[in-house]
Length: 314
Image (cartoon, helix red, strand yellow):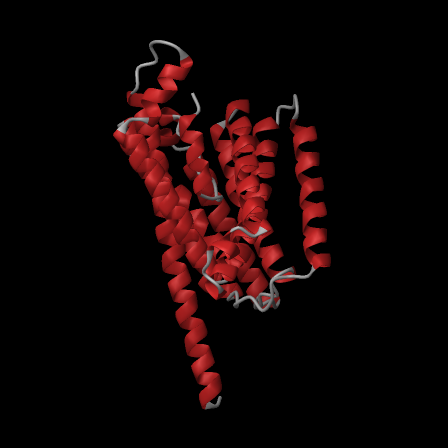
């Protein structure tokens, strides 16, 4: 490898490292912000009208601090996507559920159980092994009109099928959760476009491009479906399906739209699948944690900081 190749590899490795740190820190900021907002909800007495109760919640210092952390997490998420691949960042965003359990335990004042520690370890090992096996590379393009059209139509069709199939079904919570995860996956892809554009030209004009509006609209839509999933039934099933669906779709979009290289071969695929199974098992264990069910904390999912809006729901 020549000097130019060595330098390129070094820069790529440095970018991946920076993206990884930013992704994990943003995941923690999202989750801590949501926990603080839930703390504000639980500490607010529901006397008076619904409007007055909501106002007391959103005007409390815990909710405001949580909202600020959520916005900070959103900014860090965008920074991570600007320097790293969509696949890398979104896989690491799954760490939100690892942070969510101890923070929810703090809010609900319950002790962590052995299952929680095992679940966290499985998620950590699974994500690390998956990333090492597939070694996602940097994006090489922002996608064509055709690729984005295919992603839009395909994702919309999947969300519609899941919502229709889940209506009045015993599987409403997991199906709605998967639908929310798909929306958050597409939203992360559009956020990456916004972040890449701002990295090239940091200006108000760039920030006001259509991709920004689409990102915000998808985020709000995802939060709406997320709350429908959480209210439909089992928190654990909704959380698990949402957490799993987002990185899977993100990896597909990263590979097909952004041209991200994945180390795909018989050995890496086998290792990657085994690590994915570990991570999924960990997610399922964590989603059934007493800390989550007793705090009834709305989930941040694998989406963005706009999920902090869920903290206001009664």
